[in-house]
Length: 154
Length: 447
Image 1 (tube, each protein chain N blue to C red):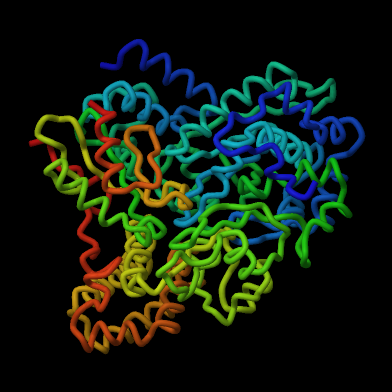
Image 2: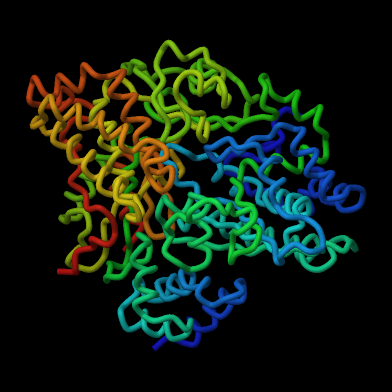
């Protein structure tokens, strides 16, 4: 069941388009903002609200790398692995993150604090290497800096 | 004023909000166009300005607009869509404009919409650009309150509304017809052309899809005129260009410079040359999908025709530098990993060919490559050439690959003869071989 707040935010997004399906990505993102990810149950509720079948909506949802269809930790780390960051040493950042957190790419720490994922170019190549934690961009990463950044996310 | 697009932008500072923006001459082009010019006159100025698209393809903007049906019998509503889905690896220019001067984006949309008589505008923004989203929302709200958006702008009979659409990833959304499917809430696969979006676009209505930087030129052309605009450039194509450099250079960054500034000037004077201990080997002039240029090309002016003569494309104008401490095969593998991952899966040559290419590059990096596989790579650069796939993604993936095979052939062969990556223990060696999951669809369930 969607909350009243989620419904209201979805309705606001839908008002920008001539048909409801056009608002489906924004609607899924509303759910994700409130719950961290989009479960099958919530996907069905959104589909019903938009007049889509849940398969139809899931075919769109699973197309996008930023619609999360599996549970994630409280904070999601998106480490850029595109060319400029790779040239500037993002592999060292990956190894450092993996060893600090004790997990591999795609995994969540056992305490549910962090999920570690790759992402494509974040458009901050003059400050490579870069990563996002939740909505925040972190630039000019070094192994020492990665350590300090993680402390900001309890 | 020689930096019209970035004149209001100060690093790490808040952008100009409405009152200051107006004081700095903002929205002048809207007043001028709506009060003194017919839509066709605005189109004519844009055509005469020789403005060409800054999103990568370089199509003449005025010509693109000329295909939009005009007059009282045309299908309505017509749409103007800003492609703010900047996701070409190595490209970081539109972020600068969106975060740095959001009102310039809104002004650009209004005056361009007037030229093609569009009724509704969407800004298609990538999800990761959260600061840009917040600033654009605020600018739209301010513009609406001041009467620059809504019904009967400035008392004219022209009405226009703007909405922000925040997307959810996937490089293919930057392809203009895939972007239209994405906006309609469908899987973002490209559409067949023709019909072209200018005639049959969003929800079947006439639609112009235009890159952020391209549109941001329009108000300045209208306000200051064609002569002034063309004089900004050192070459045939008018205006300035936001050039950028990333990689192991002394001062990576982005700078608005005259169109046609030479690669050498951008690389040496603005980016400060190579970092100590790194030597230049080549560069991709305009993002991940452009063919590599080398030393002999450094004096080429960065404009559409000159870079094409050098065998590449200016693309987005933001260069990625390859240095001698970085393995060229690993460089190619990283690029092909990106394109294989971002293939939308719609046409077989693309999804099958790109993942095959990536696997071969990975085996080379791991010291298991064979000589005949270099021929398989070369074969792919022909099989995935323009016209053989549904859209430009796969041909774009092959441009850097064929150029790396050409200029760094000896390095590919060394991987095979030595059965290892010679850069293995260096700055970026085979240890960086792609072992990451393909995307967030591979999230492992919580333990």
